[in-house]
Image 1 (cartoon, one colour):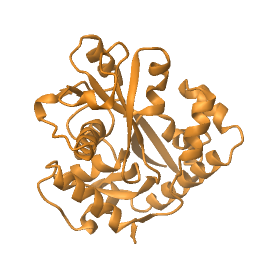
Image 2 (cartoon, helix red, strand yellow):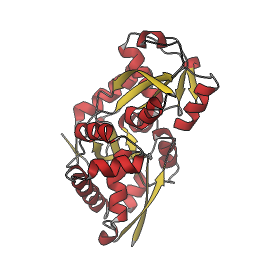
Image 3 (tube, one colour):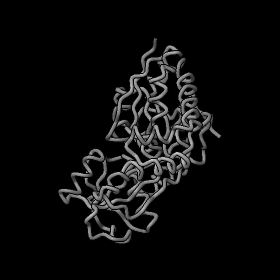
Length: 288
């Protein structure tokens, strides 16, 4: 049996992977998946992909593309979630920031440089016509770090997936003053190139099992209850999230989408060059 190490954030998006592991769907294909949770998000996974500590990871589109351009020896295997991620723009609940306009020039908590919370802060500022400075960024590692930064008044703004932070909003700890959808599909499956070469014979099986598990979740009449219970979410929020989320059903990746991401990152000065879209992708991708 071939062992492969896969990483992902501890969020509802990745439930199909957990269900496939728990049902031994991968083991039926002679694959043993060793899953690792990454509360630190895409930046932390990119670091472990670089070092070969991870074979595959479910990462934010903008984060992995930026890191590959910067030299991460990894490649895209397929799109995972085809719909945008809705980033909530949060402030401490008792902050005097009572409108989105008042976040300008404030300090942003980010999980790490190159993370989604970092890159999307720049994307949001640029769309609003603001210029974000590096000295406005406060590295907090993860969601728990952002909570502490708010409590210690070390940061005023935090972008994170809106449904994962909603329990904190409902509890009166965070207040959401705005939202920013990603202008592209939110999650990709990416792999360390050496690992992809080593495990080339089983990657199609991993793709097939994971996509089947995604389809089963979407078509399961008890999915809302399962997700809500597992991740501590309200059923009505879970139903909204599930209805608005689509998983990839094949291995096609849009050239136009990859170019859009690179153009955005380059325009914001977050990468210093652009590369051919083929250089971002593995041989398991069909570019369209």
